[in-house]
Length: 377
Ligand SMILES: *Cc1c(COP(=O)(O)O)cnc(C)c1O
Image (cartoon, rainbow, N blue to C red):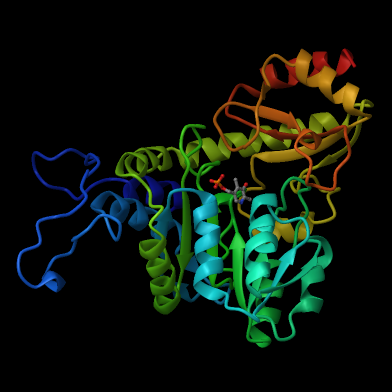
């Protein structure tokens, strides 16, 4: 079955005459649990919920696939109240004092800070190198976990996930990929050899800029059980309404992602022709240093691109004049958004650096709007 069919079918409820195609959210704290609780599939909603189960089945199908050898594998997924809760669950389930974690120096800012300001204080040792050029391969000796993110955010650097996973496994190191930007439809970390595929589904996966949600997928039932236990013990779990909305949103992922990625490609190509733009970072451009690796490991190059204008004032003028670019952080929504990243601090980028997330609007309108905004600089 092709991806679009598989994903849309995976969001439907079981066929029961007279029941809706898409069952509503199940609101519960305890469930009826007579006698021996091991006979009851659902007992208490911090541990499990039928609406999570439907969402987790759908995500697990998306994360399942084939290795390059052609051998199939099955994934298992766990959903969380946010992308950060999913990242924290992998850290918490795997890392113990004295363990070494290798991560990109340009990994998602909040994940990096969580490791630096909490896990490192509890005795976890961090080794960092940039995403580009597979620099982390040199740091794997004696490590416990390799954390990857490709494309990196917001610099859009690419690393070779299959190559690094193989090197990590040779050294006995577990591999987790933060796959937020491409979504599992755009890139399948588990098929490339990773042990964990982690994502903020707040972004393109649900795509309507109205949900916070995350997931962790694995092929290994033992790792799955550890992450599940972490979720139950820490308890910051997803609400059933959010789980239900996510399932509804995922059904349109194939449509949304395809359009958004086409738009991102056209915007990147357009920006590259403009003299006001110092450089454009998008893995779909053949001039991008990671293009060949990205073309091999990604099915879509993603909705996000970054570009550099001369300075802060040029970037601010551009964003003010562009009426179709909603100024907001985050990315992956159906409407195009953009922001000057340096206003947040924390990432090693210049004052004129803009991150743009392509939405699903008519591309002609977006390009006309950006052209007049660039003219105004
Ligand atoms: C947004 C994001 C996260 C965190 O997700 P939340 O849903 O905001 O908690 C983690 N990793 C990446 C790459 C992100 O973009």
